[in-house]
Length: 349
Image 1 (cartoon, rainbow, N blue to C red):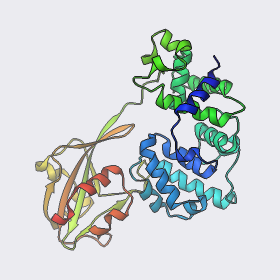
Image 2 (image 1 turned 60 degrees about the vertical axis):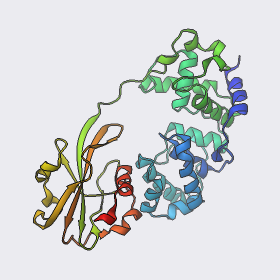
Image 3 (image 1 turned 30 degrees about the horizontal axis):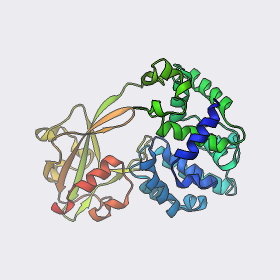
Image 4 (image 1 turned 180 degrees about the horizontal axis):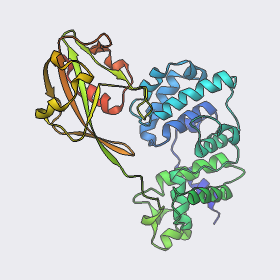
């Protein structure tokens, strides 16, 4: 059995029809790969369609303002991807005369482009023999060859890249790369893989040794921390509201939020006085306050869990930096904030 030929044959029968597979346009392929990092196809496809519709060329994306890009990205998370996407579009347009780099080596120089993305673009757009190694590929190779080296270790990253490069079909690198990734997504799935109808089942080491559920191996993640967030939804008699841009470094950089006060624990309605309201508005100007959610909304990020309360604070007059409530949906916001905006009945204020 030849590994690459079996995968390509399986792919020809089982592949999904996806728009970025019908083009060799490097811009569209790059866009799809950035969107699909840490995003499933069914979630990413509407975003891909929205971006290619609004920004049909890389020059269109480069000429957009960052807030518009972040707004269109809203809900995908990992907002550094969107910021890097915009930065790189401007770099290619302004510094590279609008010409996308056409080799793996040069693609790696782009901000936000790592080994996997460079390999994907190089092979899909330019048919370069560059092996992709993403989560699906790690899983297929680890299981098929029975490799228990942690895939997120330095040794694992190196060894799997070497193995992937040795297996790639040098005559059809683009098709092979698509095939092995699709195989991992649809056939060799993380849970309940369809082993008995798998075309590779007779030679799969993990199936033979009953190790399918134990591979691939990953080192334990960084310890997750817990934080307690209190967002102050401050509204005045003129239906203005405070909505601030986060300018510091962090995953929500340049997104908008309500004024935030962290606490050492989850607060209830009787502990409103523990919030240092003077950080936001003079507490003496507060007319009334209420707690929108008695139970914390828990927002889980890769490295921290945010236990969140939304406090409704009504006052006579807010500072000039306040915006009209009706304008709030125009600004890009983290999904945690966006969900609240969609849920809350501002007309009740």
